[in-house]
Amino acid sequence: MNSDDHEVRRAIDTRARTVKLMAHKAITLAEKPELKNQSIPDAEIWPEFNLHGATYLLSWSRLPDELPEYQFAMCDAETGEVIADAHTVPCWWDGTPEGLPGGFDAAIADALNRRETGQPVNTLCAIAAEIPKGGRGTGLAAEILKTMGAIASRHGLEHMIAPVRPTWKDRYPITPIERYMTWRRDDGSLFDPWLRLHERMGARMGPAAPASYRIDGTVREWESWLGMALPESGEFVFPGGLSPLAVDRASDRATYVEPNVWMIHSLSSVQNYEIPQ
Ligand SMILES: CC(C)(COP(=O)(O)OP(=O)(O)OC[C@H]1O[C@@H](n2cnc3c(N)ncnc32)[C@H](O)[C@@H]1OP(=O)(O)O)[C@@H](O)C(=O)NCCC(=O)NCCS
Image (tube, rainbow, N blue to C red; front, top):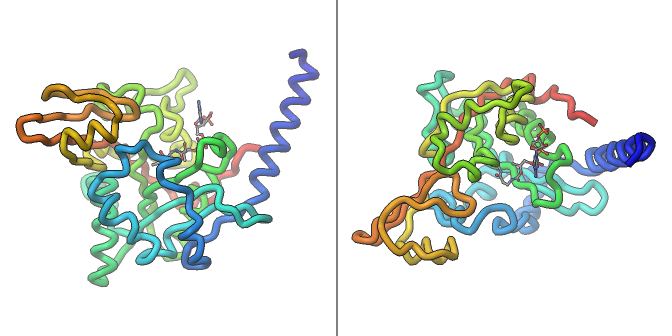
C-alpha cells in the first residue's frame, strides 16, 4: 500500500467507525422490556464453562426482571436490532479498597439482597459488557462504559466500580492476577486491552479480585464443558481459562475460580470521555 492508499483506508475506517458510533443508542430493559427476549445469546459471548457458575445459574436471569433499569442493550438506531448487551447492579461500597466486594459473585449477591431487603445502595457495579466478535474494536465498549456512568448518575449513585475480566488473561493462565495486572506496554499503558480501556477512560486500578467468579462441577461435567479429558487429580490449564482448574477425582469435584481486577471509575471522567474517531 502506498501513502495515498493509507489515507484512503484511514478515511474509510474513520467513516465506518463514525457511522457505527452514530447509528445506535442505549436502551434499558426498564424502558423497553421486550429487549429481554432479543438479547445476544450468552453462548456467543462466553466460553461454555462460564455458563455454569452458581451466580450465573441462580442469579443472572433475575437481573432483567428485578433490576431492569440497570440492564441495557445497544440497539441499531434504524432497525432496533440489539448489537451489544450490558449488565450493571447497584450495591454498597464504603469507598475503601478493603471494602470492595469479593468480585462478580459477591457484587451480584449484595445487589439482589439489598433490593430484597430495601437496604440503601450508593455504587454502580459494572458487571459485564457483551459485544459479539464481529462488533468488537469499534468504540462500542467505550460507549457502553459511558452509558454505565450515565446510569450511575441517573440513580444518584456516588461510585462506579468494575470487577474487570481481563481479556488476555487466558493467554497467561498460570501467572498470578496480582502480577498480570501490573504489566504495562512500552508506552506506559496497561498491557491488557480491556483493563487498558478502563484506565484510559479515567479509572484507577484497585486491588485484584482473585476469587471473583467461582464455577464448581463434577469431573464429568467439566470434561463436557471443556471438551477435554481430565484423567487425574491436579491443576490443569484449559482453553479460555484465566486460571487453572483444580481437579480432585477422589471427591469427583473440579473447581475454577476466575480472577478479576477491580477498576474504580470517576463518574465525571467516564461520562466525559471522548471516543477517538
Ligand atoms: C470486553 C469487550 C466488551 C471489549 O470490547 P472491544 O470492542 O474489544 O473493546 P475495544 O475495541 O475498546 O478494545 C479495547 C482494546 O482492545 C484492543 N483489542 C480489541 N480487540 C483486539 C484484538 N482482537 N487484538 C488485539 N487488540 C484488540 C483494542 O485495540 C483496544 O485497545 P487500544 O485502543 O489501546 O488499541 C469485548 O471484548 C467482549 O464483549 N468480550 C467478551 C465478554 C467479556 O469478557 N466482557 C467483559 C467482562 S468484564
